[in-house]
Structure formats: C-alpha cells, structure tokens
Length: 56
Image (cartoon, rainbow, N blue to C red; front, side, top):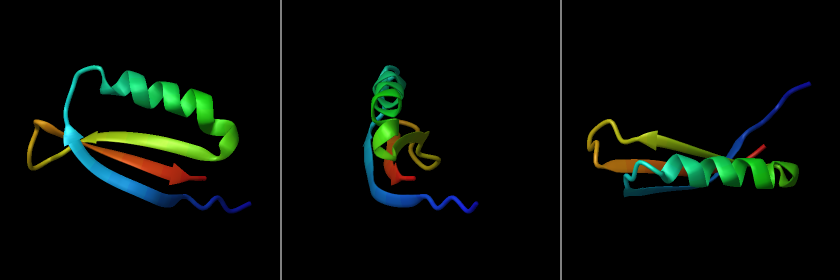
C-alpha cells in the first residue's frame, strides 16, 4: 500500500523553544483528519524555524 504525503503549506517563523509543543499537540489532535505537522530549524538562519503542514 502506497502512502503519499502532500505538502499543504510551509512558513518560516521565529524560532522558540516551545514551538515543538504546538506541533506535538496539532499532530495528536488532527491525525484523524489526515493532517501532519512538521518543524525544522532553518539551516541558514538558526533563529528561524520552518513549519510545514502535510496531508497524509
């Protein structure tokens, strides 16, 4: 069975140490809606984070 992940939106935001808590809460709450959320530190600017919304 093939699983496709579609990127719905990506935004660069100011990094905060607690951002992962929001992403974790969104993932736990909305997984039944086939949504997944990601957070990555921007490799070029460590003060920024990249927040991505996926449809699974």
